[in-house]
Each structure stands twice: as C-alpha cells, then as structure tokens.
Length: 450
Image 1 (cartoon, helix red, strand yellow):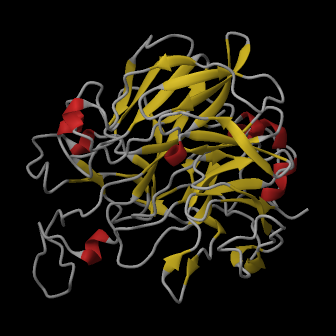
Image 2: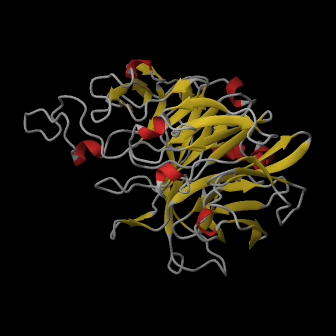
Image 3: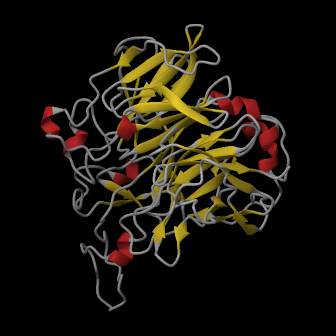
C-alpha cells in the first residue's frame, strides 16, 4: 500500500460510501444495478457512488492560516454532508505521506525540502534535497523506512515513531536522469520522480523529457517508463517494468493485491489522426492541429501497470471516441502515421480515460472501499479551464468505474482562473482526506459525514 496512514482508517473511512463497508475491496459483492458507461458496448460493472447531492460548502479557516486566498470567504462544491477546512499552509506543497505515528509529511520540490505537520505546526523534516517529490513509508528488512524520490535519486531514511527530523539517509538508486544529464542540456519537462514500494521492491517512474519525442524511447535508462529496483540495495536489481507511459504519477498498489496502478499525464497539441470533420465545414481535418480536437484528445490515463507492458506513448494515443473504459489507440499522426514505429493494436489498452488536460497527479486508494481519490491539477492546453478538482473513482472486480466529483469549485468563474490546484491526497487517522495544493500553498481537510 502506498501510504501507511491509510491503514489507520479502514473503519472510519467507510463513511465515504453510504453503501457501507465489507471485506477487502476485491472480495466485496457489488450492487445489482451497475452504471451504463461502456467502451465498445461492454458494461464496466461499476456501482454508482452513493455520495450526496453536490452542495456549496464554506471552507472553515482558522487563525494563522487565513492568508490569501483565504483572506476572503471561499466556498467549494462537495457532496452533501461533507465539510472542508484549511489544515495547514505549506508553500508549493506537492506530495503527502502520513507517518506511522500520524504526522503529515509534505514535499516541496521547489525548496528542496520535506516539511512535517504536527498539531497544525509546520516544521522542517529534511532539507538540501534535489527537488524531492513523492514519499512512501515501507517495511524493508524488518525496519520502517521513508523513501523519498529526488529528481536524480531515491533515498531512504530510517524512521522511528514520532520522528520530526530525518535521520541520515541511504541512497538506494542514483544516476536517474534530470536536468544535469548531458544529452538533455538542462531541459527536462517532467523531471520530478514518483515511486512505490512493495515486498522489498522499489518502483520508479522516469517520466518523459518532452511532449512527444522518439529520443526518450531509446535512452538509457529509457524515459517515459517505470523501472523496478531492490529496495534495500544500491542500484541493484534494475528492471524495465513498463514503457510508453509519458508521465506516470501517483503510483499505488490496490490494497490486498499485487496490482500496481498509476495516473498518467498525456501529450498535448495532438494532430487529428483521421478523416473526421472537426470544424463542421464538410471537409477532412486529418493532420491538422485544431483546438476543438485538442480540447478532447487524448484523454489522461488511469492504468494497471503490467510487467512488459507498452502503453502507447509517443506513437499511439488513446481512442476515446466510443467511451472511456478499456481504450484502444489512434496512431499518432506526427510520429507513427504509417504504423511502422509501433503496432498500436498490440499496445496495452487504457483502463480508464480521464478528461484531457486535467493533469491527474496523486492516486490514493481508500481502504476497505471500492475506489481511489485522484486530484486533478488542472489544464494549460485547453481553451477553457478543466480539472482543478478532486474526483473519486469507484472500483469493482471489473476495474475502475466512472469518476465522481468529490471536491470542485476551485476556479474563479469571473476571472476564469483557479485559486487552488490539487496535487496529492492522503488519508488521516480520523477518516478525513487531506489534499495538497501547490498554487496557494494549502493543505485542505475534507471530512465525510459522521
């Protein structure tokens, strides 16, 4: 499991679903009436999430955390009965990890630091790091370790209950590509790293350096890929797990299984791949860059990562023409027009397509429930703002169902600009969901009905 803090909330978090909780997610019986979302006519079998009607909720703000944007009253949209409050303010807050003792760690890549929040007080846990991003607690060799993904390496720190300062760390993997890699000449669009740890194995996402390029597919290590290493060694056990994954974020194992899942930020400015008439003038728009098409294609991805899997990038783009589940691919018009670079029919189907350009970053499974929380960071390459919310993806034995909004209303409708941009989510010991924001520097607490 990605975050050990999630283990503390298997009972209290059941209030997320009014349908109640049973055993482990993969063993639970499903409601009789599935949703109708399909891909190629096949039902997902996903249950409707029993959340209340969307309601405007005033964000509760205490003393000391009421700087902009909370210097004025702020409302968000949540299911009826839920509440939202400001838990802490941490500048450019990115990924989160709840410690085994219940404190909250927050990464700050821009500052090279990891902060710890205890009782509303924010202090420095570690500093002098190279753009630290994802963090995972794991038991390895009979000890508890905090693994921190820096831009060029993965370091693990021994952890003892109640620690407010990091002990001396051990480098597990180094030499990862970053802006100092000579061939990149200081340019790396997705330099931040994401990780997961399970059964003594470390999983590392090495994202693409570009929007769409061939160079990343022939580099060493291959970029736009996920590798595994020995979690107790030094560059030991290196294995290319899967490729064609442009920018995998929020790596997480589904509780009670060996299934590794990830959300993926897909490419931008895609050319029309076929003879469709996008603008309605009665003519083919094949090969053109058109905002009407770019706004919708390609979708972002939620995928189960298979050893040996190929997920398309940069030669194949998910085809969401007939739904958002189990997606096939279009050939990329720029890089694989004739199909010679990759056989898109043989690429691993995309389990779930999320709206294009919404930028999913975190992926946190909710224990004892059929679903995961996915913060959507928001768009830049879209004619209208999209994303800027937190969604809940219900789950069944058939896989992920249709997302349901858990938190929205983060865009100022008059200005057309966001006032928060969600990054990651973590589960607190009381069953609430903590959400980081790197735009205004906020940790929000989302509390379910009692």
